[in-house]
Image (cartoon, rainbow, N blue to C red):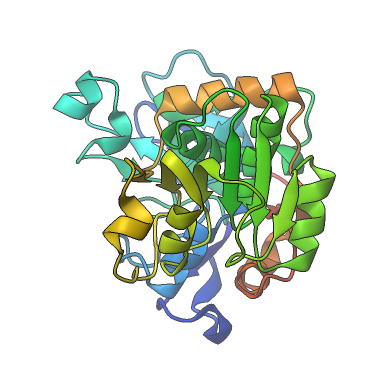
Length: 338
């Protein structure tokens, strides 16, 4: 099969990915073999390709926003059959026995593993997923529209929960890419006033089209104090900026898996009055199922830009350069080999 692999992590402009032929994987016991039809392009894929995240599997195939069809099942799989449409997301496995898993916080499991980091992902014609971590997908959305929901959407939902937005509250979103533009739709549908703060002019226009109350530059003050804020941009310099924008008792959630260093925080200006700074780590499967239900209820739609699978490296370069608003999606236009 055709697949991309991270040959040598480094700046995406220097093309660290290589398009290669790999054997079609064989599903292990409890796994599904998935014929990939579409795979979203996530900023985490960029961090893995550039080496911001440490190498866990040399030559890994990135991609963890996969929409596909079950091509085969391993032993001991129940509930899925060949031809079923499924989603493959970031969280691939947990130990199920640690204290975090037992209390329902499997996203914090020390034994967790991840698609496109610990195991080959969806920048390929085929991938595998443990059946217990595959998502059943709604029938009324096409593959390209669904793909970004499987990470950008789910992580945005987790970040919104961590930000503790009160009913009809005031929410600030710093950065407005794939995840933020989905999160904004949920927040607006639930009655929030959403203020978007991003450097990209086209993204500001999109934010207003999606119902945001205002859209300004990332270092500008929002037009009113914020109850909650989410930092989607991987820019540590924005942490004190967002904290200063919070009202008393406000919460800032940092949604990215990677963040550049933050400057020193001034306690009186940025943390006093019981403001909170929280991180977001992955998601639980329950978060994923809940978000997919909300997305269907509210009609959440991703703004997408399709690239053929063969142009994955270009898609990552465009993501880094900010050449599109919304989310990029790789489309596998090659026929199934099984």
